[in-house]
Length: 384
Image 1 (cartoon, one colour):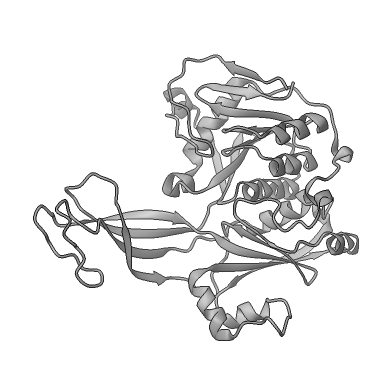
Image 2 (cartoon, helix red, strand yellow):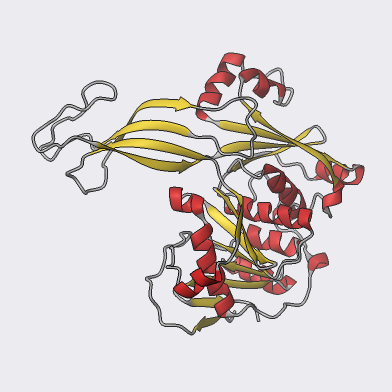
């Protein structure tokens, strides 16, 4: 297996840990170009207010949650951000080991302790998104609850359940805000059905959405043959598959020649634009992004799951019928991302971190251009 690394500029940064995106400074030339950016997938955010010792620059050693209040309503648009504020105390003890907490939400002053200042930290929301297709409960994804129609469409296509966007006839997104809503959307199983009180308790800890999809009859038959049995965890793109043939599909029908690889300068420019536009990651440090340049504009989709971010981009691409040259991921490139890219006939998939060995082999077999380590003014091409 041969990989070619291109590094034509002087390095200015240290390597970034796998899965993280390090911001790169925007040059004056880039500012003059004023590249338009369209941010289509802005994740829900939670803001936490912390009380912090002003005299202590060390990292907090412990957190104690003392108050939380959720601001959401049943008529809220699921594609818009909701804000939840929570307060916590940072640093339970001072330098002398004295307990600084005295009752809920209060601080008892101790020697060397200054009046605390209030800081705000944003957290990315991780929600359970149930995919219901023609009345069949197909899968549950842990995802950022934004652009869910694109997520659903891209998920269906990358799973091989639909062949074109026209197979999706209708969809409806519902935010679950009450126990009765949750019960109404739960599969009918009298022996295992939780009580309304139990459901209400669950909703105190979880954000939940249901995406109801209506597909044509031909696609409905595929669903019955390929129904998932488990929830898809945030970092898992294959959870719930019940057989190896599902997890390791034959993608020969999507095979194509590898196109000309994107130039390093082009990729570095994309990286710089992504770093500047990935606002949710800058606020939370907890989301991945999938991005592409289309007609001179950057389209970027963020999600707590890297495979969800790619599904959102694929769903947008299908809906817009957009022809794109390459997709840049802020994460590593694992096999499920390569499979989705092959099915979508993407010319190139580029990661800011490393690909896996299986991802490289599958990409080479089916003609997907693959590159990784887009950082430090270099990139490694795994497809020629």
